[in-house]
Image (cartoon, rainbow, N blue to C red):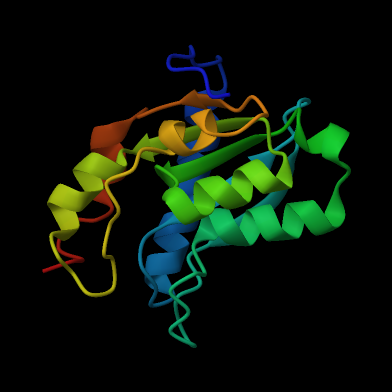
Length: 164
């Protein structure tokens, strides 16, 4: 089950900013500004993903879901339980489910889903769900530690002017 409050680790901000870099890369590549990375317990970056909405218009190609899928195909469950997924924004319900099923043990995110919804409004390419990732994780049998929002103002800056 998800812990309602978890303290950040000393290197969380550094890794979260790397997820922000992936979000910036996504935007430079014509996608929505979302990015994520997967880091093992020793601080090694295992996977990186940017939002994959384009070129196919795949509404399920969120960076976190792409990482969860790749991670579950690549690493053993015992390894993933010790990994942290850093995401530029709070994982949506779909991504939280994918993270849970992949067995990733920890999530750190920048921009909250609630604040993202205020930024995007009712944009057709981001029909934001009002469901915190902690709610999804709490419904499961496996513990997922959650830290966030962290560096939220910095994360929000990546969305300025994008959803107008």
